[in-house]
Image 1 (spheres, helix red, strand yellow):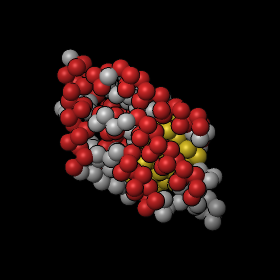
Image 2: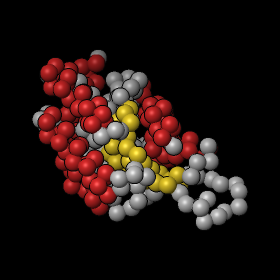
Image 3: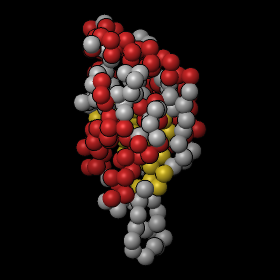
Image 4: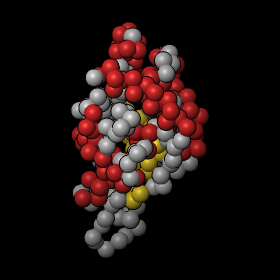
Length: 223
């Protein structure tokens, strides 16, 4: 059964490269006190990733970045969420568009890329370089921004050495750049049929709730 799910994962991620969308910033913070120039200043949390971040197959307000926005809203924290997820995005494509995305102020940057590289067998060294280049551009533009890396894994049928080498690059880059690390974004969701859509790849609404929890455990301490 797991092998069947993996084969769906491989085909689905490749097919997903045909489409994508970038959501507009969603301000989720409420402030019940009288507004002041300082209290109305909201910091921006940017989610930069592929179809997982974009929430392919679910409503925009059901994707994990929006769910994290709801958590922030419930705590009256002064942050807004920008979902810059694009379906089919590889690390190379992400590197090509990051400068455009960085035209808006970024206070917290959450990087979720690499899955499409892994499922296409792109050399691990190339993926790592692209991820580092993205991080370098963010740090150069917003040196005070807090950074979060979300880890990813590929199925063993990609080859045990490739899978092993791929899984460690996220922690290596996080350690090198003093980034907070979500060890595996799809923890408790990947390979679980009832938490994924019919393509066996993209999480259901319930799956996105778990993704939001996986990220929130790390993100909350930065806010």
